Amino acid sequence: MAKLLEKPEELRVTANIEGTPLTITRNGKAERVTRIYQQWRVSEQLFEQEILKSYFRIRTSKGVIYDIYRDTASNSWYLGRVCD
Image (cartoon, rainbow, N blue to C red):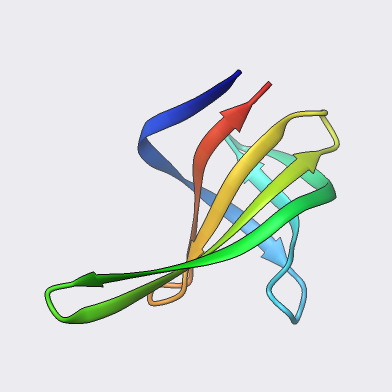
């Protein structure tokens, strides 16, 4: 069952040069990304400005599956969904 967060939670993420996440830090606890299941991009228009988000469905070293994304305009990472 997946839980879509009402408000995305900001994450600290380390990524490689291509932008692929390697570790995420949530609630002060780091988790290593052990698998990437999917990767996709979404482009949205907001007040005539294009917003591009890079999404990843990942599994971490704790065995949890997350949908995370990076807002390319701010270069900030967010948690959008937790799957169990």
